[in-house]
Length: 266
Image (cartoon, rainbow, N blue to C red; front, side, top):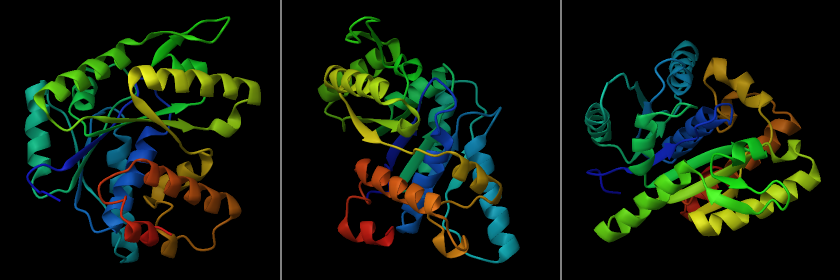
């Protein structure tokens, strides 16, 4: 891969509590395990969940004297979009991937990072509350009435990029916690998402069903991919790891698409 311009992956959803930072860390670590050089920017200086996860990871590696593949991470504390671009350029030096984790709120830097992405990942919980971020549905028919401001923004950016002949944004909506939704509602969401995906131009990928496991891993900075260090894993961990592997494959990232990369995560 070219080191002058790393592949940019932005994790963005203007609603919190969708598993965004957890997914971002797991994707970063999976890429690092494949030998990729990964840089990361945490756009939320208040919570800095991703940055704290990597801090915990570094402390565990030091304490246990083990080698844990990881990412270089910095928290963005600048004041302008230009400041963000400067930090992104600095972090991109020698990196294969640049991962940006955005806050779970409306934020000008998050929007800018979304429009600069090569891969834009929007995790959402399987509910119409989260669906509202992408588009509005009719209360009676559940047909899509219109795209949200956010979806329009990405749509316009993609059009502009196509004219400039720059690499198009691959927008992936990740459905998390789908097992927690009652069947009838799930079908409605599925139908509405499929209709909306054609209009807004995103792909839908199944995400993570369980959260407790990830909360347990956070203090140590471990991920489900650190299988040599996690001891005996229960069934739920194994299921979660399979979900994570399927999600990584579904993102179609430059390195992950290779057959041998799949084997490394097996």
